Image 1 (spheres, rainbow, N blue to C red):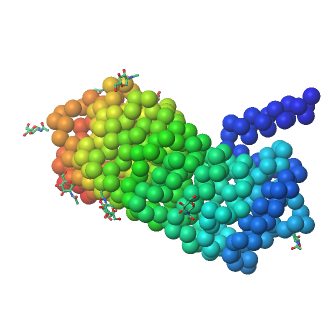
Image 2: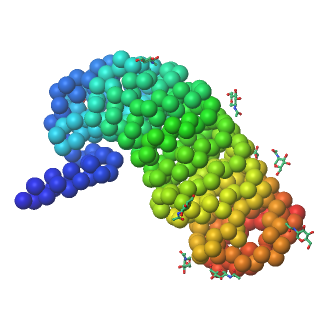
Image 3: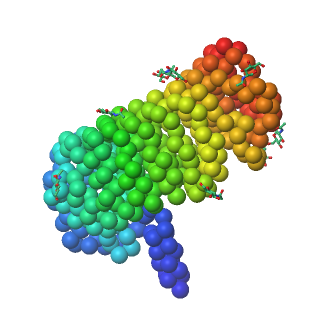
Length: 330
Ligand SMILES: *[C@@H]1O[C@H](CO)[C@@H](O)[C@H](O)[C@H]1NC(C)=O
Ligand SMILES: *[C@@H]1O[C@H](CO)[C@@H](O)[C@H](O)[C@H]1NC(C)=O
Ligand SMILES: *[C@@H]1O[C@H](CO)[C@@H](O)[C@H](O)[C@H]1NC(C)=O
Ligand SMILES: *[C@@H]1O[C@H](CO)[C@@H](O)[C@H](O)[C@H]1NC(C)=O
Ligand SMILES: *[C@@H]1O[C@H](CO)[C@@H](O)[C@H](O)[C@H]1NC(C)=O
Ligand SMILES: *[C@@H]1O[C@H](CO)[C@@H](O)[C@H](O)[C@H]1NC(C)=O
Ligand SMILES: *[C@@H]1O[C@H](CO)[C@@H](O)[C@H](O)[C@H]1NC(C)=O
Ligand SMILES: *[C@@H]1O[C@H](CO)[C@@H](O)[C@H](O)[C@H]1NC(C)=O
Ligand SMILES: *[C@@H]1O[C@H](CO)[C@@H](O)[C@H](O)[C@H]1NC(C)=O
Ligand SMILES: *[C@@H]1O[C@H](CO)[C@@H](O)[C@H](O)[C@H]1NC(C)=O
Ligand SMILES: *[C@@H]1O[C@H](CO)[C@@H](O)[C@H](O)[C@H]1NC(C)=O
Ligand SMILES: *[C@@H]1O[C@H](CO)[C@@H](O)[C@H](O)[C@H]1NC(C)=O
């Protein structure tokens, strides 16, 4: 009975949460062990810098190797070979793509030579977490991911030298909970289909070249959408009042853009935000005596804007803890 319960709990965890249970050492499926050994052989890496790949050898079984996570029945479901000084490329024929039960793949912080994401990644249909270090131009990288990884929950492609726009079809990945595309050279406008993904909780598009206005936010957004980081882009205009359609919003960093307004007098119901960073924009606030505000903010950074008067909405702030109005024209 306890064993059954344990298996049931593990089943729940493995099927509902991204599977990362390193403590489970089941017997590795032989074919998967061979695929991993072939994959290792195909990689160029500096063994003096490696801490995980060096533990992969046939004298132990693969579920015990560092960086490898298995399911209870011995399928390889997680692979983390980030920061292993890998310097080659991965192509369509890599044995990596034989690991068909892979749910989580982390290849970040390596020096891959490939210039694009191999389309064979589409064979990994169960993938839910993807963290790469690769580069890509145009929207090919985006179309490749959108058309091949329907179950993806976490997409992290930070600092990958990606350029071009985010494609609309990224919104086909309806399970996405977290998107981090920061520190790239992405441009164009931010697609409204992406900010409206129904399960999205965290969107980080900082340090890119996005321009134009922030799109309207859907009133069907997830109540768990709590983090929006758009700092260091070329975005402009007013932040739409529909931002309060994100009912769970807590952390907002819009600094270092060219925004001219924020709906501080916007929501008609009481709302608390933890942190709003609007520094280094072109905020003016000419609400002319609109003292009424239901919005309560804990940390508010309005430094380096174009304020000419003390903003009236600040008179009705009861949880304010940190306020920065430096470098304005008050
Ligand atoms: C990457 O590996 C090097 C050693 O090879 C280590 O010094 C460094 O802390 C690692 N970085 C991360 C982010 O784990
Ligand atoms: C295989 O890896 C283990 C550590 O996981 C190590 O102790 C052992 O020496 C390795 N064997 C060979 C032949 O490299
Ligand atoms: C992978 O294979 C597809 C066809 O199956 C081809 O169009 C694509 O160029 C290949 N990509 C790479 C990086 O080899
Ligand atoms: C995005 O950048 C590319 C060059 O990387 C350029 O050709 C294209 O015109 C830019 N698009 C926009 C909307 O700025
Ligand atoms: C959401 O917006 C649509 C129009 O865009 C409207 O018809 C609908 O009533 C709104 N739903 C809620 C819950 O506000
Ligand atoms: C944006 O805000 C978050 C916290 O709200 C902070 O961690 C991050 O460093 C900020 N980014 C910049 C560029 O200040
Ligand atoms: C706000 O953003 C500015 C500019 O990006 C940054 O220097 C500052 O540290 C940020 N402050 C907070 C509290 O995140
Ligand atoms: C202010 O924002 C601009 C982009 O809008 C950026 O180039 C500049 O470095 C930022 N300045 C500071 C002090 O963060
Ligand atoms: C910022 O936006 C204002 C209009 O609100 C415009 O006049 C100004 O040129 C913009 N600045 C930059 C650096 O794009
Ligand atoms: C906002 O914060 C205050 C003080 O912490 C709390 O009493 C209030 O219930 C919060 N309101 C909402 C809508 O979360
Ligand atoms: C605010 O009021 C002043 C004079 O009372 C007027 O000149 C200005 O246009 C008003 N601004 C707005 C945005 O209504
Ligand atoms: C001030 O904020 C509180 C809490 O959100 C709200 O109940 C009250 O009506 C507001 N007062 C004004 C004048 O806006």
